[in-house]
Image 1 (cartoon, rainbow, N blue to C red):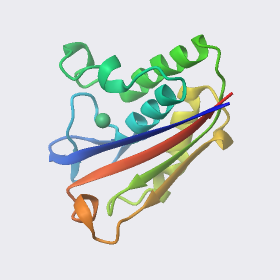
Image 2 (cartoon, helix red, strand yellow; image 1 turned 180 degrees about the vertical axis):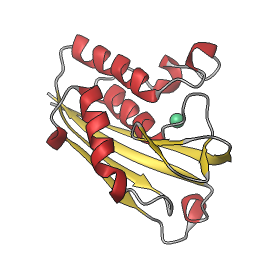
Image 3 (cartoon, rainbow, N blue to C red; image 1 turned 60 degrees about the vertical axis):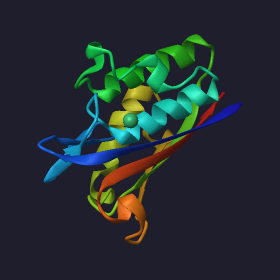
Image 4 (tube, protein in one colour; image 1 turned 180 degrees about the horizontal axis):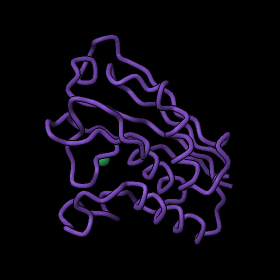
Length: 155
Ligand code: MG
């Protein structure tokens, strides 16, 4: 068994859709980034890559490559899952914390779990998505961006 951890953060940007865990969430601002800036899926991919010692998403999907401009992070996640299973691992579970003041995660939790578990090829129960705030402190507290932390267990 192997565990992995992934961390990511993206800045709020005007004029972009907000995509979290593969779900487009109605919001005044989205997150800036080369892909769809899905901070939740980015943290999860780094956790998966970390667990099998396969590097990180910055190396695998460089933000200088036009092929990844605006791409759905779920597409990238499926590529990572293919790598993980190609190395002989099975995903036991994934746990993700989303750190922000806005939006609230709970109303979108079910849809995120569904999107993520489908991309991972696991049961819904194997994927957890939780929201938390930093009580107004730091960049997430000031509403400058969203951070995510993910852990996975591979067998
Ligand atoms: Mg990222």
